[in-house]
Length: 252
Length: 234
Image (tube, rainbow over all chains, first blue to last red; front, side, top):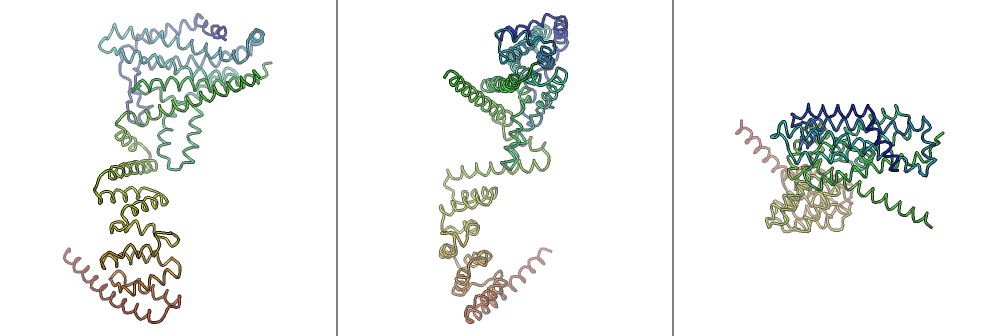
């Protein structure tokens, strides 16, 4: 399982990823002067703490990491299937479950390494160029967004167990885009008078992750822990769907 | 055996994952919707941004929560009038069944209070063991004639849908107590029709005619008074 993960992580040494890494550093430098980011288009409906922890720099870097997680997560399994690499890998003492979990771990770790590198670079640039804008608490809190990459990786990997690489990428993008609009559902649930309808909406709501939670400031430690556990539990549930399908799938 | 144990462990694992998922999601949702502390302001702001049909629903929910809170506070205090008002305000926000439950709770607390008449009228039902016609007659027994007349007028609109026995009993009570008022004028016509249908003695018809005539006089005085008041205003 960890060999498969390592297999994915080593992609970071490929020229495209080195270029991306450098591009991220340049972006970090360019955006290090901007502190406040109005994310009200995601959270305006509640009118509460709309700014969140993310400044414009970390927000762009997080988005870039999400795109990489989708890209890597959606392409790895279909490519192994198309090149018959999967038959070689599964000849080893490796179960299909471990293979899928390894791919997820690899995707998550790869996107996290990129995100953390950029985030640290952003912090350094901010600290040296505009020390008065640097906020240590926000800087440290932003590290927790690594956990936001887990469900995104899980969605991509799960979708890629069903589809070929390009359709998997498109569908993953669509699912994740819809997940960014899920913030209105908890509000709607609070105002629906009919209990049955409320349950139905809630059921639909539970089928997708609510990425609006990513753009809220963490008010307390409990809030932060809830965010981490939510991301991990959600990733595991999504991954399970992928594993069940992959175990039953004809790989020829 | 090992496979069975594995399955049990797997099931336990998934139960834990689901529990963690739902509880953490709930915490995040509560933070997301209510934030910390200033939930009232946030909900106000939220209400203003919602489309009309959702705004009304949210506002009514807010009113309900506020009324419930006021009632809880009033229950802790000693002010009877405030408590009764809080009961009515909260009841207004509830559905019919819940409202009746709340009214019964109020009547249990103050079974002889005139201010509870609205609650009594709401829960009064022919099939109810306590809040039926007999209960009503007991409830109004100690009130002044004026208050009794008002309550009897209100009660008629319910009693006329009760059983024949109840209707007879009510008409007999009205005759015995000789209630008359401007508002009761039209009610006597209905009572006379019901007396005819129920084949009650003709003497009752005469008595009802008498009371109706008296009520009519009062009705005319009431109309004159109303016209006078209107002229004064103009």
